[in-house]
Structure formats: C-alpha cells, structure tokens
Image (cartoon, rainbow, N blue to C red; front, side, top):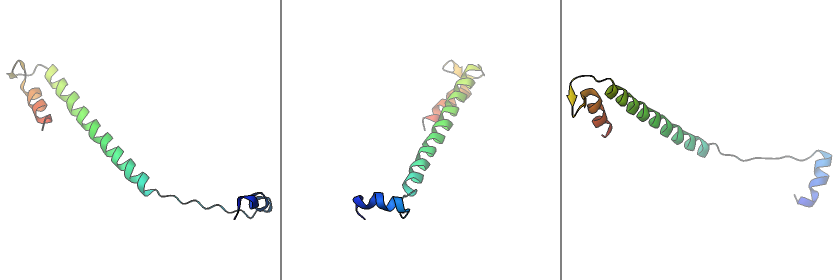
Length: 78
C-alpha cells in the first residue's frame, strides 16, 4: 500500500495495523536488573548488620573492635 492511499483507506475503514514486538529481550534485561538489585540489597544488609554488631561492643575484642563484627567484615571480602 502506498502512503497516498492511506487517507482513502482510513475513511472507508479498511486499515489494518500489525505490530511486531519481542518481549524476550525486555524480559532478559529486566531479569538481569532485578538480580543485580537483589544482590545489592543483600550486600548492603550484611554491611549494615556488621556495623551494628561492631557498635554493640560485644566481647571478645580483636584490634579494639568486637570479634563478631570483625569476622563478619573479613568474610564480606570473600
């Protein structure tokens, strides 16, 4: 169909539109983004938890800091 025929076809009501779309790429991108977000939230919760443990002043101490908090910080590096 030519563009010049478009007004005539729409006036008569014979125009059909067809859209091709692919949700596969969108789903893959959203999946990757949600995985990164979930991982970031878990890591930030571990860091905040470690800081809270260090602030509690639990004994025994390592290098002047509570041992559970120090161990948790060391474990986060791995």
